[in-house]
View 1 (cartoon, rainbow, N blue to C red):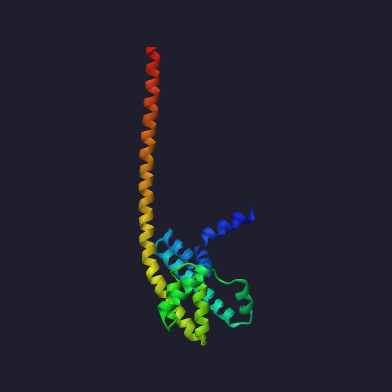
View 2: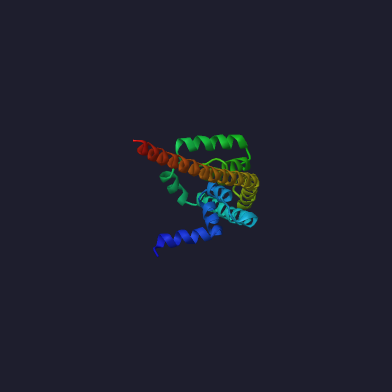
Length: 192
């Protein structure tokens, strides 16, 4: 068995690991995993918990990296695009002096998460305060995303069931048309 097939099957059966890795990369992966969850309430709890842990670990790593000397080198090499910088500035302006709102809103807007954490690490010198506010932002994000993902997941499930029913209907119609076509051609040949 090839490594890629093994890795894909491993990740398919390890929703918790996939949720954690998704949280490390981007919140959108956790949101998608919540939508396509097949394990019911227990799966939602697992995805939410491990996604939460992944998001927290990512944000804490970014916080500590931004406090290090290594951050200067990273800033020169990985500067955000103009569009991301504008979004981050708008998010920061919405929050005013408190960076909590920037952390919270960045969870919903793709490409702004690292910038908001960097801003928070610049403003907040005490890790404990940052950790508490970031954890609260992630919990509130999950409080919005979990019900939304359940609703979207149910809607998608119903949509796919409707398509499946529609698919059967289209197959029956096609079969009828094919039968009518061949019967009609056979009758025409008999007359000729």
